Image (cartoon, rainbow, N blue to C red):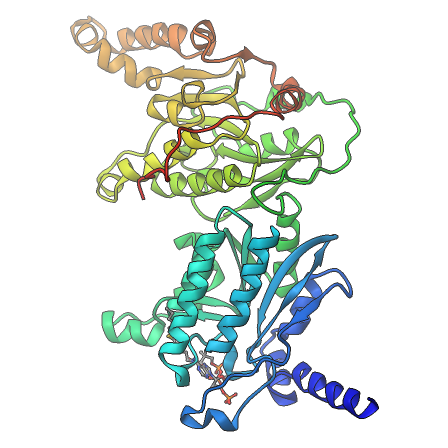
Length: 513
Ligand code: HXC
């Protein structure tokens, strides 16, 4: 037995070395952690159980039979994060550049199957040169097997992708289907075609970082939800995100212990500026509403006119969607609609109640928006709110104009509780624009048109730029003092905690994609 044990230990230590000491050192020299170091950082101490450590590829083309490594470029298994089970794969760049072979893909698929059958999140740590070039179509098939499982798992278990190195070509479509993408600045990049192909086809000169680095995808494309400073930061962010979400679609999100305290937030009474055109920071409102330091913003640098993220109120998870008056006056445009819609759908898929904070002047006008499809893109957010069956609570802090009033979780599309602050203005449009249209003739014929306009604006403001008419119709349930909002939210979400609402039976809806 001793001999056999020694043989086993020998194989295990070979596997632990991945592509060998030199390549491990080169990984560190690039400022990157190794695949195993990442798993260790991610999981609770000693919780990792590896599956398939001794898997090797079976290919022989291009001399591959002479080059085999235990694990075949990906470390797979399960473990816990803060005591909660997760399934993990971590690509090992030191073995054929982390490229995906048939055997490598099978290991990932096995983890995904186990995660789906056992109802726990899948976390993929990506660091790969793409398809194992020597294996040809076997490798392509392996990718498709993963994409298929990503799609089946979508909405069943949370899927997180942490991009820790290259992720190029068709390989990007696995992270793209997952729920959240995290990238590391300067050491990770994602693109369908790299700078060389771009140069050949479009004659554009661009670096990998500018084309598909963390900052580009966090701010320009919105592909990544997080741009992290380094790998440790990236892994910590992913762990924090998991703390708000349940293990699978059948469970409720975890709650933390909370003792009721003084829930009044007097500073909220002073947040709305004197004039309606002045900006303020919706994040500040959020900070006063949620448990201290509990807000985790996602997609922070993309479509900044809408803020989305997770937080806790009284220890319980909520997903927050808020217009951001500090950026483009909080207008809804194509990117904000897409960002909001995807977030709402994630929360709904995983039983996370929604809090919607409204201060929106409408949809962004212009040829650019129209020609890029604000009609169907904006409809995504509308559709997402309409179909969400989780508890939905809205607070209108200031403007709720036009179609955007309807879209932002209005009572009409299924919100459970709608509050408004006394500063709310619920109308078809801003008072000046409205007065100019409906009193056009009267203003033109007046001896002093300027004076007439001011008079008519005041008239319109008096009648519509407030929340009272909406409250009369029951579209707003209560007009509340801002300082009492947190208290109201705690009561509402507690009142709604057993909400059970079923949509009409269907195969699936047809969201305007
Ligand atoms: C096999 C690969 C590989 C690959 C890298 N290696 N990519 N082996 N298949 N796709 C190997 C290298 O031969 C090298 O082996 C080791 O990994 C490290 O690679 P280096 O080039 O030395 O590293 P670096 O300079 O950091 O460059 C990393 C890289 C580059 C930018 C990722 O390796 C690269 O461009 N690779 C090819 C990328 C690619 O075109 N992939 C296919 C994309 S198409 P040694 O033995 O020297 O350590 C695709 C289709 C997916 O993925 C379709 C899904 C539908």
